[in-house]
Image 1 (spheres, rainbow, N blue to C red):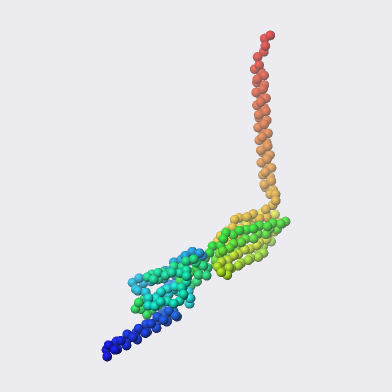
Image 2 (cartoon, rainbow, N blue to C red):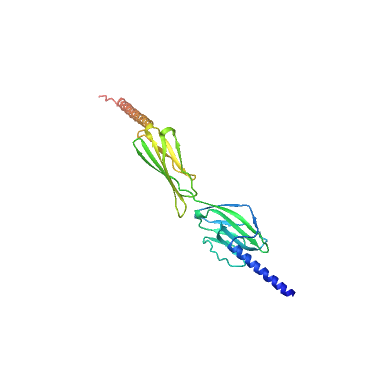
Length: 278
């Protein structure tokens, strides 16, 4: 009787354990959870990132699931094979519950969960991982087109994530109707999610004041450019004339000095000629 009771008890325990295993694999998880502090990670598009989920090294892991919301990413189960598809760009170190994610994309940004259960324990620990994937915008380029008293400048930058605002900076008299923003274009690639942004500004150059302008995108700034530059700058013309006059005067003085010196030498030779006694 005792042996039959033990066998029945063992069978019930085995069935219960298998049932719990199926529940954890299909719908994570129904057992009590223990939450830890959230972890913030950063990565760049095209690069790799290593995600270390907190693990108690003194315990044996029964299963480890790494998910993004309800989507299974990668993991392992010591009691059964996981049938769910794993992300191709990920791999897992079973003993340390470490996830390697390669060739990052902007779409990999988001909140992930580390689910861990240890052998002999009913609780499942849950750690939240926030992964921010970024991409640097290209250095902005500015194209200038001027006609009469109006200049149009278009600044463009591409390949950045997340979205950022394009900013213009004007050095000079930027008040009043001197310049206005005509349009801003922003597009996101449906596949890569990277942003391309451009903006066009109009300058009224009838005021005759020269200005310096640059644009920046995501912390990257373009080269400084002159706008509303007069065809003939009075200051430059004045300085040029002064330089030419001064240079001409110096040349004239040198020629006069050489001429005087030559004349003196000629007179000296004439005075030193011997007189014939005949």
